[in-house]
Amino acid sequence: MQSDEMVKSPGLPLGFVWGAVKAGIKASGNTDVAIAVASKGSNAAAMFTKNQVVAAPVTVGRRHIASTGGRVGVVLVNAGNANCATGQPGVDACVQTCVAAAERFRCIFDEVFPSSTGIIGVPFPAEKVVEALPDLEQEMGATAEHADSFARAIMTTDTKMKVARASIDVDGVEVRIFGVAKGAGMIHPQLGAPVGPAHATMLVYLFTDIAAESEQLRGVLEPAVERSFNSISIDGDTSTNDTVLLLASGVSGVKLDARTQEPFANALKLVCGSLAYQIVDDGEGVGHVVTLHITGARTEAEAKQVAKAIAHSPLCKTAWSSADPNWGRLLAAAGYSGVVFDPALVNITIGSQPVFELGVRSAAFQESAAHAEMEARDYTITMDLGLGEAECRFLTCDLTEEYVRINADYSS
Image (cartoon, rainbow, N blue to C red; front, side):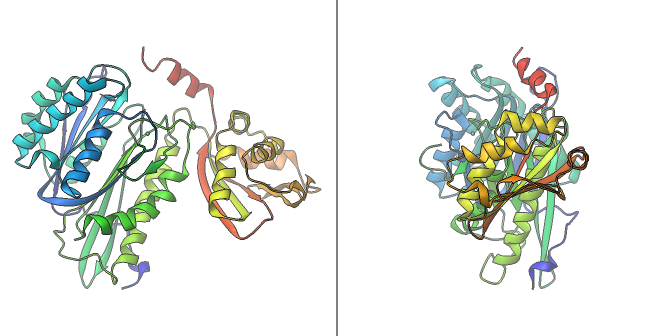
């Protein structure tokens, strides 16, 4: 079995059912409460926001993952209300929904994993979620339509649902991964362990039917997240609710072990990478998706530090919105990133066009050609620091008037 046996699969992982209903939380009247149930339970690994301000479901979810040793039976998600900055009443309300879901779906209380997304600071309507549970039970199923209903219900400012699938073949047995995500604004995930400092929000749920312990799942989840969700930014704002949850039902009967770990990890990275791209591509007001390829760094961490400085620069992002090849803004942002380098060693290209070489504007720089490269929906900016062999790829986007309009009116 080789990692190149990994193929995209139309199948869903076994052992899960999904569903969604309208509970009246979203002002739009769309579906807003979603559920995923592992009928035999699942082992799980989770990563949460590192924002110091965290939502009630992050507090409760961390507690539950710790108390059960990573066992999850029910994932309960609502959209339209973040249940953040709601104090102890918000935590109590979250607990109330978990108790009701545990009773309805016959698992222990701590095996319910809650998530919320939406407006911060509004009292959480736990009663609406509880009242929706009987209808959710009737709407659950294991078909693609049921899984898609889960993906649609968790959307806020998203314009389309975000899903991805992959599979590996192990001696004729298909092991499947299905990923669901939401997020279009307030996106600069900084995800870490479910203990310690605890990020409209990114929520990611990854379902697989491989058999694995929680610690094994964490071992494959963390590197997949670091090069996908932790390597994207739409607006530089780290949410209070960001969560990534990986659940393994074990129903395939295939174990995650030394033989299967590499191909499974590759498949998981494929799914996470696809979802991360879909989040940026659907970013609020996005006109251009920009890959920052930072090379020649001393360490990958320093490469990412430079990439983040560029990705979060309003001057760079607004230049991208009009396809302006202003390489000076790129260099300036790298210069204040905190990474020490010599501009005389730096080379910058936009797409295939050289714009800056070894301390000065490139002799081959053609503004019109660079502008043409930047008119594409997707393109890459490469900056070589001339320091070493480390590199990173960081996915970001432009900043447009539409983004300002969406967020100026978000809560009104």
